[in-house]
Amino acid sequence: KNQVEQSPQSLIILEGKNCTLQCNYTVSPFSNLRWYKQDTGRGPVSLTIMTFSENTKSNGRYTATLDADTKQSSLHITASQLSDSASYICVVSPGSNYKLTFGKGTLLTVNP
Amino acid sequence: NAGVTQTPKFQVLKTGQSMTLQCAQDMNHEYMSWYRQDPGMGLRLIHYSVGAGITDQGEVPNGYNVSRSTTEDFPLRLLSAAPSQTSVYFCASSYKGTGIWTEAFFGQGTRLTVV
Image (cartoon, rainbow over all chains, first blue to last red; front, side, top):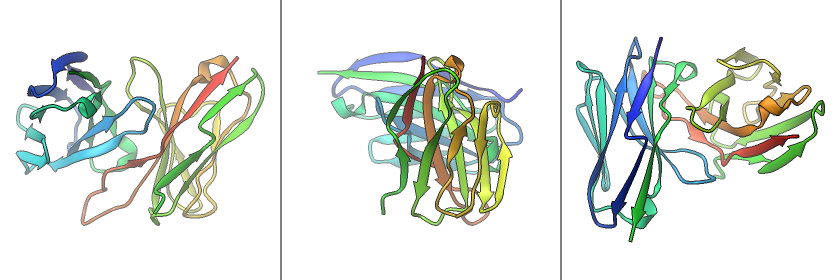
């Protein structure tokens, strides 16, 4: 069964600190992996999308890594801000958008 | 561009009532889909469409109908609302880039409560 597991479930950090969120997947076949940010009461917004040939991709203070061999990805947030408080969702695609597998998300809280 | 627009934002229904959740996109995306998001679970696909006139079922289609008469609109119909359909519903759209599908663009969600 295709699965996407995210850890930790929740995380609290102080403003200015870095953090790393993890995503392990068992989806096959694999085409690309996406990270989304979902603010409370809002729809998910795409942060990065990586194919199997990409190891690292950055979007401002967000850097995603992908190891297609071990089927692991991470999202690193540098110099966190209060506005980073949100749920971060890992999504894996086998190549078509109607077969996406969503993780349950990591709830990040950034405190002043 | 407004992106993906969902209406209404909030809705309370009584068990057995029917209603339609509206979704419109102005990006000329060929692919549109409906998801539901429940506490402690990842988003689950209800129905999707790869173009006008073409729809198919996702992971949790029971109790829902869709149609796609235009590229822009993809309404979701609840036939006879049940408390188990209390959830947050998201509409999303995307297109096929050079070889792969792009990331999905999501609407703001409709929070539905069935009492």
